[in-house]
Length: 149
Image 1: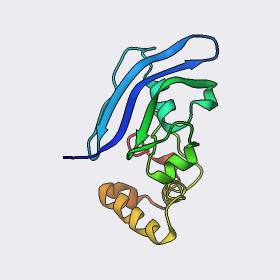
Image 2 (image 1 turned 180 degrees about the vertical axis):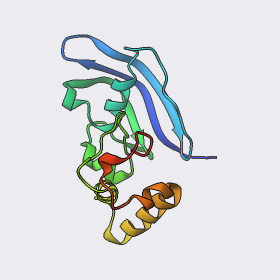
Image 3 (image 1 turned 135 degrees about the vertical axis):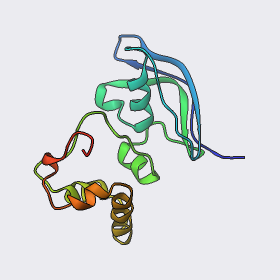
Image 4 (image 1 turned 90 degrees about the vertical axis):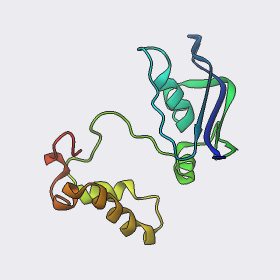
């Protein structure tokens, strides 16, 4: 039986005095699985992601009730940098790259939390998955197409 990597239990989240933006949400993501979060505008998708990734405080939100566990450990209230070190990441929508830096420098920024010995391994892995980035590693990232970014 596969362990649960992420478990959200009866999570309710609010912003200021506006009431709840998310009410009683539960979700289980088994290790190694891929999950899509779908819903109408205003359904609470972004709020859920903010609560899970430790970014809720930046938006003046608060967890009213419920829990979030990652790898079996409660993570509510942990700062986002600690969650990243635990292996959690968030890929925001849009083209949030450093356009003036090279493609490889952008990848190195993303690898900043890895031990030095693992950085080359990580770059090699990315270049294997995306050979076009290897070809363009010295180019300005601002010149990449939208899909490449």
